[in-house]
Each structure stands twice: as C-alpha cells, then as structure tokens.
Image 1 (cartoon, rainbow, N blue to C red):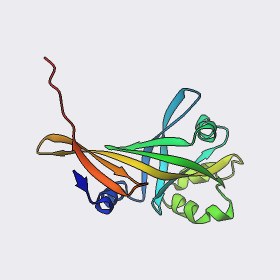
Image 2 (image 1 turned 45 degrees about the horizontal axis):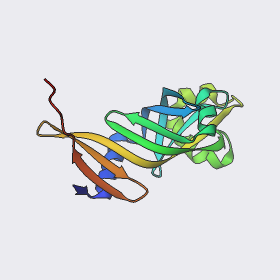
Image 3 (image 1 turned 90 degrees about the vertical axis):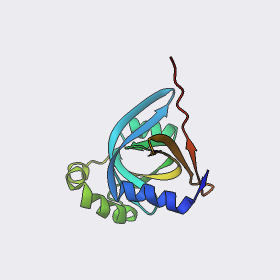
Length: 157
C-alpha cells in the first residue's frame, strides 16, 4: 500500500529526534563490523565523529555504503568524510554535536585523527504493528516514495 512519503519520513525523524545512539554497520573485503555511535540528525542527514585510525573509518573509505539501526528502524546510506572535526566548515555540525555529546567531543577534540562523517540517507525500513499484525514500512529517499507491506508470518508445525 502506498503511503505519503513526507509524513512517513517525518515520523522517522520525530522518533529519532536531534540525537540518538545508533548501531553503525560497515563492511569491506567481506569483513563486516558493527558498533554503537553517538549520532546527530541535522538537515535530513546523520553525522558522527570518529578517528581515522579505526576500522570503521578504513571500511568507509573502501566501501561507503553503510547501515544504521535504532530501535525498529534500519537506515541505509552513503558515508562521506567531511574533514577534521575542528575544520571551520564543520563548525555548525560540531556545535550541535557538543550540545548532546559534550564529553565525547572533549575527549577526542585534540585527537589529530578525529574526523566528521556525514551520512546521506538512501532507504529506511521500519517495523510497525497494527492490531497485532506485523508490517514493514519502506521509505525510498532517492525516489521520494513510501509503502507499507504486511509481513506474512508462516506457521511451521
């Protein structure tokens, strides 16, 4: 069933809010990894900081297709390195980051390897339930479309 794209996207952003701890999955050379990240949402994008000496950074550089998961929402996107966290062009995002993750920022702000990563959202899948029945809501950012499909549960005896 087709849904209103803008309404469904807004529901996701409302659920996530301006900041959230999310699981970030990255993969390169058939080596997947996942970890929790302190993320902020701004301008329909998701941002986090990380060190260039970490496996997630190496994997993003080799394969910038990533996935994030928070609660019952899975997000697929493209990761872009925006430069050092203290570069002038990143100041607006970092000010928001400091508001929610001050301790994290202060811990790593002088680390020469620390960079800001931007996630451009491509697809969102959200699990939902109506009258006890499972549904998946698919939001295609690129094509600005949303749909809902019932998840058929097969009883195996």
